[in-house]
Every structure is written in C-alpha cells, then in structure tokens.
Image 1 (cartoon, rainbow over the protein chains, first blue to last red):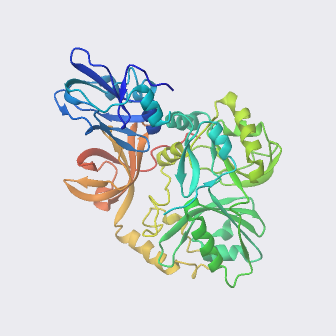
Image 2: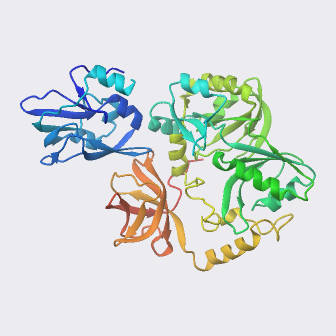
Image 3: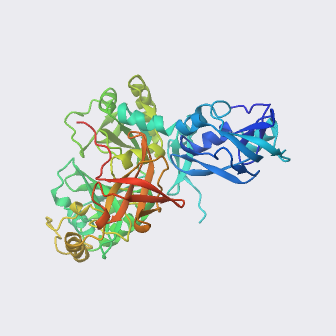
Length: 125
Length: 374
C-alpha cells in the first residue's frame, strides 16, 4: 500500500489533508483500516463540535474491537461524512478517498504530524 | 504472562496467504486473510477452509475406555456407536464446566476427545487423574494431528472431489477413517459454524498437502481460507457457546441452558460420575427457579455489544453480555447474554445494553439467530 504524499499523518494513524479555505479533511490510513478489519460502525464528531489535536473525538467499531478515533487537528467540525455513517465499509474500501471521516475548520496548525515517508517508516507499511 | 506462541503445521502457508495472525490460547492463529465479513459469507453461501490445529486431541483406549469416559464426562458415552460422535462436557465435582468437548468413537474400545485449545491441558490432566482404577489408557495426541475444516453448503461436493470415502453415508456427528487427497485422515462431519461441513484430522506432515488440494478443489465453488474471526461470528449466529464466554467453571451445564448434555441415565457410572451430585442439585434448581437464562439479543441500533457489558432494564443491571459481534447474516449487531429470568422471555420490552455509558435498545430473542435450511 502507499500513503499519499500530499497528506500528513499522526502516530494514531489518522491522516490530514492540506487546508483549503480554512478547512482540512481527516481520515484514517489504509494501514489502520487493515489493522481494524471490517469497520461496522462509525461514531463521528458532529458538525459544530470542537475537536482537539491528540484527543479522542469518536470511535470506529470493527468486528473484533472498538477503537478510539483521535483528531490530528484542533478546530471546529464542519461536516461528518454521512456516507461513512451509512456504510462504514467505505473506511476499508477507500480510506484515503470516499472513506474520509470529518472536515475541520482549522483553529491551530498542528506541529508534529508526519510526512508520508515518515509515516510509512513509522507504520512499517 | 509470557510465553512463546505455538505454531501449527500450516503456519508458513498462512503467512504466504497474507493472513493477519492473532494469539489464541497460546497459539499463533489466522484471524482473517482478507475481509472477515467476506469469509463469513463464503461459509454461509459457499465454503470456507479453516486451520483448527490448535484444538486438543486426547485418545482414550482400552477395555474400560467407555467406563472411564462415563465416569469422567457428563454424557452417556456408552450410547455412542462406533463411528459416531457426541457433544459433551467435562465438569468439576461441584458441577462447574471445565470444558465442552466432542468425543469420537473411533473403534470398539477407542475414543478421541477433542478439547478447546485453552483447556486441553486441563482436560488431559483431569481425564488422566480420573482414569485411576480403570483398565484404560489416556494418551496426549495434541501433536499427533493437524485439524483442517471445510465448512459450508458446497463442502460435500468439494470434499467428494478429493476422496473416495462414502460421504453420503456419513451422518452429522459421525466420523470415519479414509484417504483425502492421498493422505490418511479421520473424516468427521462436525463443525462450529451452523453449516454442513467436515473436520479432517491428519498427521501434521500431511496438512499442507491436504490444505492445497482442498484449496484447488474448492476454488471453482468459491471456497476461500477463513480465519478465527469469522469462525466466532459464525458460531455466534448459530447460537453455539464458546468456552470462557458462555461456559465457565462458575456455571453448570444447566445454568448454560445445556442441561441436555448431562445424562443421569448412563450405561455405567450413572450415580457416581464426576459432578453427579452437584449436577442433580443444579438440575432441580434450574427446573424450580432458574436464576439467569442465556438469551439472544439483537440490536436496534448499530453499536456492537461486547463480552462483559451489562444488560440493563430501567437503569438496573439485569444481566451480562457473554459474546457480541456484528452479524453479517442479520446485518445487525447481536449478542448472547445471561439475563435474569424475569427479563429473559423473547420480546421482553425495555431491555438494553450499556455500551460505554449509553443504554442501547436490544430485542430479546430465542437462540439461535441463524438456522440453516436443510
């Protein structure tokens, strides 16, 4: 698998897109999606809630386990991906595209995210 | 607890297939190869191939083998015909369940007990201890067998293509020795998926050859390798208990709704088998005032119940989830739970599961969730 170069990554295996018009998109990596197995339930932060970098903001449930979802960025959620809520398997089938999780109006640029190459080395993927 | 994981004879093959491995009872086992939902559905609609070599085989032979088993186990092993198998349990003197087992009668005076991986040593020790005074030999055959299962509606056709054994004559819960893909095997029509299927006990050195032959024979019918993750959702849908979840030493078979496996009418040792007195009392208790009952729960929402979560009614804890998972067949989360008798009737209103602080509504149903069409 390959981690897209244009994204930045957290050590909790979330990805963050570049900020456009003040808004950035968050998802989980393909590595994380594979580790979880089939995602069956996504509890995503609702629009209007504030998320904080490095803190939990929801959960992803798979057949065998439930995992906390961490935000890689601080700001206000402007949209949760309703397609993923309706069909959580999108997180497995398209983690970097249609399986994005939520969009954030960035309040504070994150400092310690990884580049694609750094993340690939970190995840060993 | 630190230990080195044990590996089955198929370990290298699993890794070459890209399996995600997991520790299970000290064994490094395939959890899944791809999507566990696809694997589950393959077994329900076509066929799946499992490595179950972690299961523990114990052979009991000798003139009094059957008497030993009647004494050591709760079932009436004397009624098992040659070539047949029986689901049974081994209990403590206080009636608590040590393990659930399948006993195969391989010959006139030869039986094979198959125990759960996590309990195999306990069962071996208990049967060995209970064998004192019997003219019977108890043999640890855990390393003598690899176990490969083919499960699903296409499994008879797939197996027929690689064996001349009389599969049509092989009934559910029966076993016969034969040759499969050129290797000697004990062919048993048993399983833990709720589907028709076979379990093949072979020498470990033959496991890879058998696995490859079944993979090739099954590919046109849609057979795929399947891991323990889907084995768990398959057995859960079929309402089958899992030791450590629905069955523990704190429960008797009667508490688990499986009192039928206990036989007080045996061909020998009917009065003095291990646990007999306690189990008689448990039977009466279950008849008069069952404390809790094992029920099925189906979610109205999408959050998944897990073992250990509380079952609640009006904010009060009335039970505990023992197993839970998203059900691929039902498309909803399901669970098995022990629930106070007052709230255990199918259709009981107001039952929920406390999922990390939120009381999610659940429907109480009778088990199993899924029954195959025959």
